Image 1 (tube, rainbow, N blue to C red):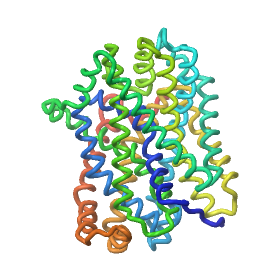
Image 2 (image 1 turned 60 degrees about the vertical axis):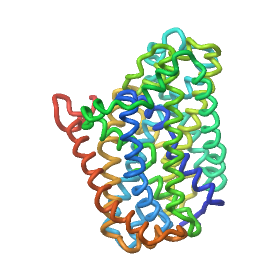
Image 3 (image 1 turned 45 degrees about the vertical axis):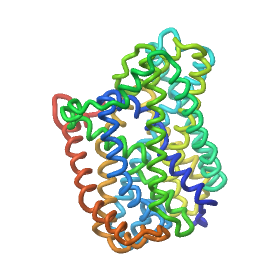
Image 4 (image 1 turned 30 degrees about the horizontal axis):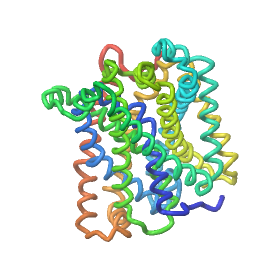
Length: 445
C-alpha cells in the first residue's frame, strides 16, 4: 500500500473541493435547467436545496472522509461498519459512470474552442453541433479530454490536483465575472435579468413536482455529492480544520458560480432574441454559440467563454477520476500514474456509446440525476446520521469553535428533513424512470 498524501494547505483543499463542485453542472446545465423550469422559480428551489440539503449532506461526506483518511469504500470498514461499504461502492460507481459521459462533453468544449477561433459554428449553430457531438471526431476529443484528466491526477494530490485547482478556480470566477459585465452592456440584457431573478410563484407551485427533483438533483450534481468525490477529498485533510466553515464556503462559492453563469448566459440569449427554454445536452452549445455569432467580437468572447467552460470541466473531472484512483492505490501495491492511466482508459471505454450517440449520453445523465446520485446521498445520510451518530457529531465539531447546539441541529436536520427531502426527490424521479409510455430507465437501443 502506498503512503497516503495530504493537502499542502487548507486553501488547497477548499479550492479543490470548490473545483470539484464548480464544473459543467454550473455552466453546461445550470442556466438551462433554470430556463427550462421557470427561471427564478427554479433558482429559488435550487438555493433552498443547496443550503438545506446540500450543506448537511456535504458535511456528512466530510465526516466519513476525514474520520477515516481512506477512500470511499475502505472508509466504512475503518469506521467499524464494513457492511456499509456498499454505499461507498455506489459512490465510486456513480463517479465512474458520470465521468464516462462528462468527458464526452469535455471533448465538445475542446471542439468549440477551435470553432471559436475560426468562427466555424457561427453560420448554423444547430447543424454544427449535430456534426461534432457524435461520431469519430467526438470519440477522439473524448480521448483527448480524458488524457488531460489522467495527466493531472497522475501527478498527485499536492503537485497535481492542488496546484491545478488553485489556478483553475480563481480563473473561473474572474473570467465569468468579466463576461457577466460584458453581458450587462448588451441591449436587451435586462429581459434576461428579469427572467432569471424575478420569480413567478404561480408557475413555481404549478410545476413543483417537476422543479423539485431537478433542483435537488442539480444541487447534488453541482456539489459533487453522492459520487465519492467529497469523501475522497476530505480523506486527504491533515488536521482539525472546521468542516462547517469549509462546507459553507464550498456551497456558497459553488452557488455563486452557478448564478454568475446564469448572469452571463441568459442575458446573452435574451439580447439576441433566442429562446432560453431549451433542454438537452446541446443547449449551451447551440444557444450560446448562436448568440456569439451576432455580437461584436463574438469570436473572442466565444473563445473566452469556452475556455472557462473547459477549466470548469477539468476541475470537476479530476475529482471523479481521483475517487477511483484513491481506492486503487489504498488497496493495491500500484503507483498512482499506473492506476490513473488504467482507470482513465476504462472510463474512456464506458463513454464510447455517449460519444457515438447523444441519446446514450442523455440516458447516462438521466440515470445519474434521478437514481444514482440521490440513492448515494440517501445512503450516506442514513449511515452518518443514524448509524454512526455520536462519533459523526464529534468529528463535525472538531475545530469549528461552535456550540454543541449547532452540531446537534446539523445531526437532527440530517436525520429528518434532509432524508425526507431526498426520499421525496427519489419518488418524484422514479415516476420518470419507471412510469409512462417511454420509461427513462430503458436504454436507447
